[in-house]
Length: 107
Image (tube, rainbow, N blue to C red; front, side):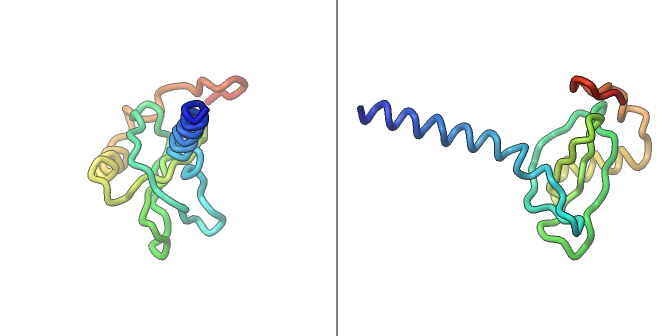
């Protein structure tokens, strides 16, 4: 019985950990700040926009908007994000080239 309870708890913890990696941090608050940040690589073709959040916000973040209009708060101190933003600002040719695969949404 203890094994079953342990397995159920472990499954719940894994589910919560997995879901908090995307859904819990992808919302921007009304004041334009991010409640937390991710270090999640989003392929160029799915990035529609990249903006910095206001300077008075903590943690420091960039908001990556995908072709499906999902917003992700990405760690602004992460080298990968800084490089991706520089690429986005200089040449958008490799960005925003994929269509949203969500049903009922066209880009």
